[in-house]
Length: 276
Image 1 (tube, rainbow, N blue to C red):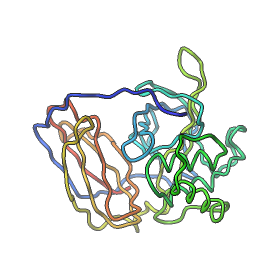
Image 2 (cartoon, rainbow, N blue to C red):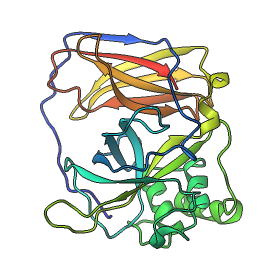
Image 3 (cartoon, rainbow, N blue to C red):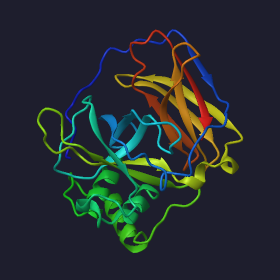
């Protein structure tokens, strides 16, 4: 996919109430994304990415799997295949290291791609271009020094790469044809915590709110700090009773920034974070 069709929400309205719970509670979870993915059809929507090329929201997933309903950072697999923001798509989830991948992507160099996700350089576009090139696809110019370095490093060090504790794994979305048109839909690779990085021994012992701000034409941004190598789930609520997952955050550097693009237009919004 070159680009997703532009669809920008304008006219932000300040939130009347903001509450952030920076505590953590245990979560029921399975063994990890590399072994515990639901086989049933799931649904998803995409939007412009805030910290990745695309933001993907998963829905209709059953409980007690490593991948949950909510928002994930994600990247395109096929340069020339389209996907539209806001459209509800369906598909299936696959482990890039698994033996049951669809034949058309079964022999793609997925360890190299996961290596790139764990050794990012440059801009979001640089990372996406590096992924496309490593997969043998086209790319959006220019192909920068940072993108070339990521590809070179992946070719040199990533052929047998397997994520370990505190690193990112990945889950592939193999989409069904588009509703109505039955056209092919862009495959996506979503960022998911490696199974060992989210066990109880890696529960964050401290998390700190560093900043929060409105970003024009974007949404409400939170910047949090926790220990590197840990992961947690950011959730939101409008009544402090019913909580919905927003994004699974994998801590690979000193701070993490999260932007809630659904906040505009809501009278109030509450946030909390909990470890997985």
